Amino acid sequence: MRNGPFFVEGDALWANVTLRRHATDAEGAAPQPVVIYDSGVGGLSVATHLAGMCPSRDLVYLADNGWFPYGNKGEGALARRVHHLLDSLAACVEPAAILVACNTASTAITDRLVGDGSVPIIGVVPPIASAIAASRTGRVALLATPGTLSRRLVAELIRTHAESEQVTCLGPLALVDLAERKMAGESITPRHVIDAIERLLPRSGRDEIDVVILGCTHFPLLKDELAHAFPNARHWMDPAREACRATAARLSSSSTGDGGAGDGRRTLFLTSDHNDQHLREVFATRGFGRASAVSWETEAA
Image (cartoon, rainbow, N blue to C red):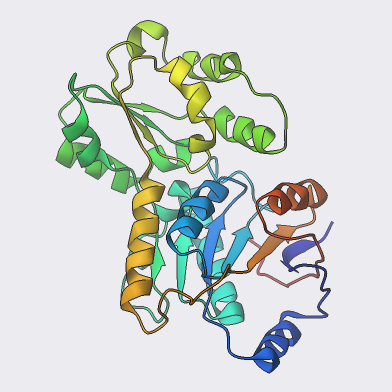
């Protein structure tokens, strides 16, 4: 099995990434793209938001399928992996910004989010303060991966903005797999989702919850099914929306502008050939083209 990012764009098969960049330069200078980074298809919910805000901006999606899922990875190893992939991709495609569309990855590299680097890196973190302010019952559910819930940043946010017992943290990693399967066209029913939630919190513990934080970018893909598990939820907080707004604001205030007129191109990178044909088909339905790919060497994690 090959293990290293693949370059995917339309029907073109490039011998290496440098050739593709030279070809783009020959065709004329194009606006710098925005990179969307996730371990799987969860970032497609983010791509939809960002494309709506910046329809003419080119988007490059990096799916680290070689290390999927992130939710059960150790913080140190994950941080090294993310740093390396972001640095490699930034050098390759020279993006205007990188949007880390993964709560687990974002909370592992908080030292690099926004910051003063040459390429702004925007992440997604749980909006604890906003959720508490929106709740009438004072009961909020934070749905996230076990990896995200173990981060010091998340514990600090809860300690700072909530009182004891106000936030119920649930780490249903099974929902990530359900979201991937739903995107692949499999029928996922509310029962599937309810079963995953009830293993962690029975119905009696969910009745007073009126705000749910979707602390994983895969989870908005299951919002309709999740509504059956949290029937009294009035607000669904999706931190990815705010991250997209922040990214769009940085683009509009920078010299790169908003990308000009017309529809932006969609480009895909994968980090392994594991399940790659299936993933290519899923991404193609969202405008990320058919799969033509070559190996791109990476550091072993």
